[in-house]
Length: 454
Image (tube, rainbow, N blue to C red; front, side):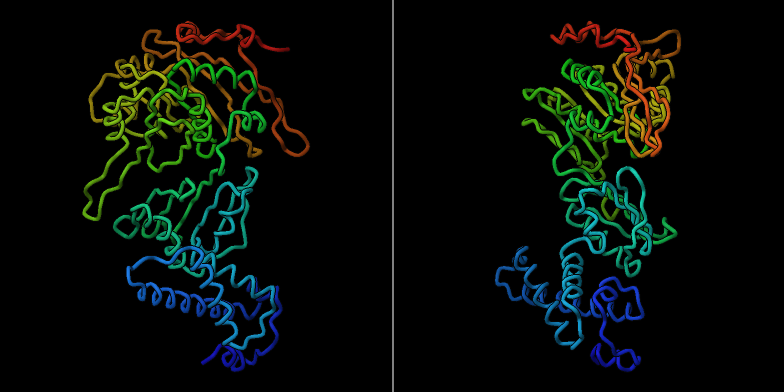
């Protein structure tokens, strides 16, 4: 029975205007959805047949698939004799292109450069982050299976899987955007999908200065620290911009050095020529074959790296990272979750103990104090902006305590009438102890960089 006849049976035969048909916000929403489902089935069927007719079994190319989606969308609409306005027809075709060749309802969000994060909380709730603020959209999926199909489309090409036996996964999109998915029974509201987007062109230090994430003096200081081969940690809370800052810092590494990057899902975008990118591997369906960050850090030490850059430390690999920093791999960098630089040091002790070795706390602290030179702490402010709030030197040990000294801080002074955070980046007036190490590497920093202004 055609869609038109079903409409007649419901005593609902009327011209559907472009607005209501395209957004499904009236009594014909179910009929609109049925039309899209019929188009989708037809397209999938035709594509399968065409691939089956191919003598060498090759997949259809992108241009050919685009043409087929447009052709069969128009064909099914015409066959239904449904009075669809031209603007609504275009919207349907765009939806079908996203459904068949893209990432379904969230495809336009992923293409929108102003959207920095997409959060799918079950099929009926989709949030985005825009200009640092969370916004609820009117986008919905049909049901749980619809969300699962999109998740499968993301994780399958990179060899990841998600099902009841493995209900959570970290992955990435082809453009490097970070993806996390979690499904029932772990999620009680249905499949959840979080996508952290990254700019097509990596941000530069000038971008961060323009965003008021740090000052020019801080930027000059950090460039000198990276060039001078200091071991650096970027700490901060979730969504504070740690990975972006790590990527910017990595751009200061000289091009004649061999860099090995290690991540759960590769997202760093280093522009140097000599970069080896390593990525972890989850266990297979039998629960075997997993390759962890710790495995990769150990392997990286055998790859003759000048620098090791780890996307994030969160477990026993922290011990291996500290040992690498202490055994000639100066200039290594990583990130970690923490609320303050001091809090990060406490977390390091916990993470080192997760390596399974019964080490005395003092021995761990001595390793930390000798390995790490600098902690850059970044925060997501209440107005949605990201700022480097502390640049802190790890000075050494005093008794059983690791001593820290802030070199730069962000001093908040209030808010303006729009709620924007006001404040300034200030040097503390303390000249870091590691200046001598930088000078030994040929890096000179003028003393007035550390003088407080005003």
